Image (cartoon, rainbow, N blue to C red; front, side):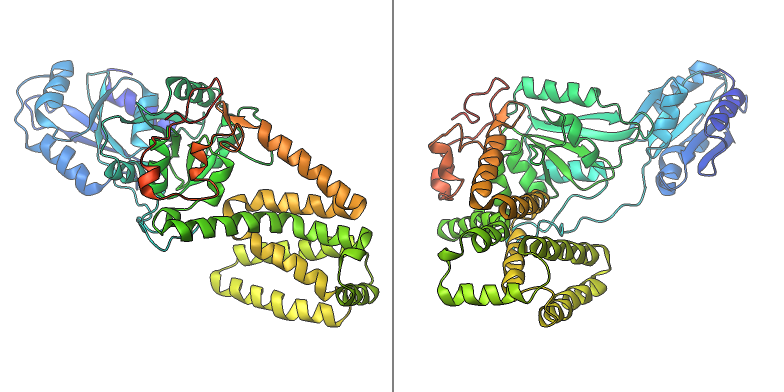
Length: 486
């Protein structure tokens, strides 16, 4: 920085190309020398009331002597400004970074340093229940787009001195604030250090959401079907994962928090499971597993059995199926693919449109198009029912919906070409792929393989809290082996 205030102002305005939201207010201090100073802020990021209380009023009401330059700067730093967050900055990059984060940056003529005073006041969405993770019992609070608010929601639930937030910036152009969140005595040092290195290796220019970071945090770095990076919008869910030694990554500007590592079995768990009685939670969880396999395999098995093994059907049923196939113009496999595509189009239309129109699209798609297509002989009723049941089951596990969609289409194609043998081979390939996948050394399908009997108490069957509380689940180091330690 320059010692001349005018040169500093000219340099900053030149850097931001005189942007309309970058404001500069110059004032003269009520001192003997009438020293000129300036306050740099970004419009909309700084609260004007806080700016007046913590910066402008103290500067104009203080008593000054004949100090100038560094002496005046130190006097203002030590005795005048009353903000709870004051940071000394020594470069133009820091000035712009702080001002664009809601700070008011104070500069005085004759000094090549500035002060960043916390006066943040930007608008953000209030805390509300996340629509993607609704629960019947439990908290109605969800993460927002403001990073500091999200950190507060976690701290309010985890009053633990070992809970650590590591702040940093990512994205060479966006300079997005992120926070690495973990419990110091639960998460392994190797895991935390590995994540730090992967984040440092991220060469993105702009980061607008947590999903941008997922490919850089995976072990293989490839875009695979299944991912070992979990996402949650619930503070209570994240706190539970942190207690198991997981690591959270909070990204400013998005309510979705990344959880690393993430296990396959966790897609079938919800907050309600731990609020309800064990027998009901177990029943619900078993239904989720059944829905998962039905949503993936049912259309493919339907094609395989009708095409290659019709003898497995009762006589009346196979007669009705054959009648429907005879009156439709397309082959069975192509008919199922077409229905699946139409369903995905309607789902996407209902998802992107406003809620009122979204319901209208669902009604038109289900009643009008479906009924008319059957009556017109374009598609068969048994085929439509098989695809519809699979589609409904896929909504039971929303976290796995992208994977279910791709796998269902794959099983439809392989079932139409190779029958049940093709489905069996593809099932083996998917199983091998899932068992070989790991994140930070943690196997994706743990504790099913490597098998751990005591950790199965919360996979297919949810045991009571008296048994669950006897073990402290904690993710182990990167070297593999058992993922949990007692």
